[in-house]
Image 1 (cartoon, rainbow, N blue to C red):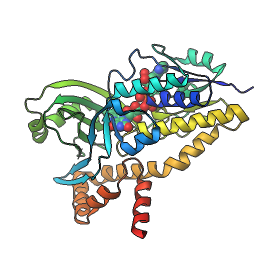
Image 2: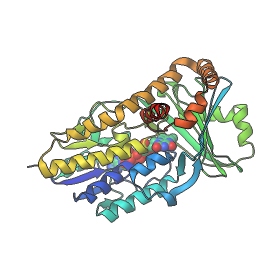
Image 3: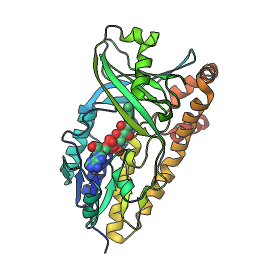
Image 4: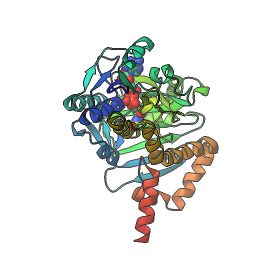
Length: 366
Ligand SMILES: Cc1cc2nc3c(=O)[nH]c(=O)nc-3n(C[C@H](O)[C@H](O)[C@H](O)COP(=O)(O)OP(=O)(O)OC[C@H]3O[C@@H](n4cnc5c(N)ncnc54)[C@H](O)[C@@H]3O)c2cc1C
């Protein structure tokens, strides 16, 4: 007989959104997390598109620390500035965001159990009565235990916050193959007075902290940080690929969020895709429990809706990996000359390039 309860492993945003959605659909759900304080220590940033946030239906407003209008992209001495007339993204306090998601899951009826590390033995036990949702991040125990995909491509990151007064509302992205091979370095104004400085590198090129130390010593960055106090610092990893399989329908196991590799390979942002996937997974689980529908519906729906976007993000990532710093810089120069900065400012969508193209074609026909 099919199981009728759900155990979610991991109370990050993906696991909590899955639990909230399942509980609202009337499915008995328990979420387990090894941490005492969710989201702590903060190892990742919280830049989320305003459109994407609306789609997740989170009451996020009390977690907003800053609002952004665009990005400056730097490579090989060239800069392309993409600024929207309207604010396009919020920076969210990650601990607060987790708190809000936890509250929403609990309000919907989910049980959240903290300080409970789920290992292979615990998974075998939980699996006796529960459908399992693995929302346990990039190094997923659930994926490993149930044989869902092997090793994945990933990026190593290091980021730190500094007190720097008078920041504006733009993110800076620095593409430099020597400093940040296959990824980039960034500045993000987390508040008007706190600058996050970060870097991501391909693991084949050593250690992210060493790359970070080299980046902050470059003359332009050292000038910005001159006299600033470093407030914190943390290393992390970002999965760069969707796993080959994100569902095992027979075993009744699903993966969501970073555990599934549901990120944008261009920037490493994963909260929006992971959150949408969590809601899709909940729908599939409910249909499975109620009418015996296959859990494969989740994977099919996710791939149909998001694969074209993920492929476009991966294409952008390959472009800057292949072109090199100068080549990418030349490309920015050409894009500026062709007015692409204006195009992106007007039609750009941070999460879904397919939506951006649709917007452009619909408006140019009108
Ligand atoms: C430097 C950096 C910057 C980023 N910037 C952004 C950004 O600006 N915007 C964006 O959208 N995304 C960003 N991301 C990506 C984003 O942080 C992730 O995509 C997102 O956190 C994934 O959420 P999740 O719930 O799937 O996994 P996680 O947030 O990793 O949560 C997994 C949870 O599972 C728990 N867990 C793991 N194993 C076990 C176990 N065995 N038993 C019990 N609990 C377990 C962990 O304690 C954790 O709470 C960034 C990532 C990094 C590293």
